[in-house]
Length: 346
Image (cartoon, rainbow, N blue to C red; front, top):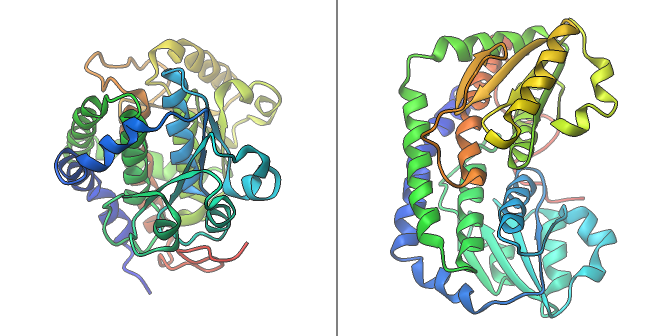
């Protein structure tokens, strides 16, 4: 049986993990990043499973913003339905914390010598590292429960890898350090009572919906996965625009809607959805710049991290912390029941 505080301890280590990534890739890992400047793929396929796939989604959003062709495809679909995408002109970015996820390793074996494979893993002696043309360490340290620091590390390293294509990794390194500082500030802040309130809401409501737009969609999916896997409560994540196309009908007083509202271009759209949800009797909570804001009157801060794919890592922290507290409230240990830390079978 694992210590009930292990997940929260991992969450609190995230700023140090991000700082360590920044230090390593500014020094020892810088040469590996520079090698990517010689890569000129026709397309980039970003893949993984679970949390690793959500990190791959973030990488794709960043590549789109820089007019680079990217396809986020989970490794299961890529293995069974997307093999035709992989050719000599394709750059395959594979993310697996363990480096042994069944579908991801099957994709790597299938793509070996067919296209360039860039692997990101926490285990450099893993199958993924051995099959990759270049293997980048995520440097997250040991993690035995639901993904937290390995997820943030996956995102940070994936964005460093992608930014190296354009030779702008120094900007990403600066943003990684800024994100680490901001998360640490949230951990040390006096707003823990708001996180406790969110934990209470998670435990009291039978319908939990988490929405965001753009890169915040990946944040919503990771938050919902944490709620399901760690707290064992049903939570559904969705792109906020898609939520209007049907799911809005399910909202009532039995539901809670958690919406990420840090993205300035779509902030008004998120608040419009939040206002309509409130009119249906649903409790609405906004996450803005890493803070829990009950209601719909929050404003995004001006002092923001320039890279939005990194900035929304700050918004993930309060939901991680709320899930940790919700777990304590509902009881039970942190051990897995139906799964394992490494999914080694399809």
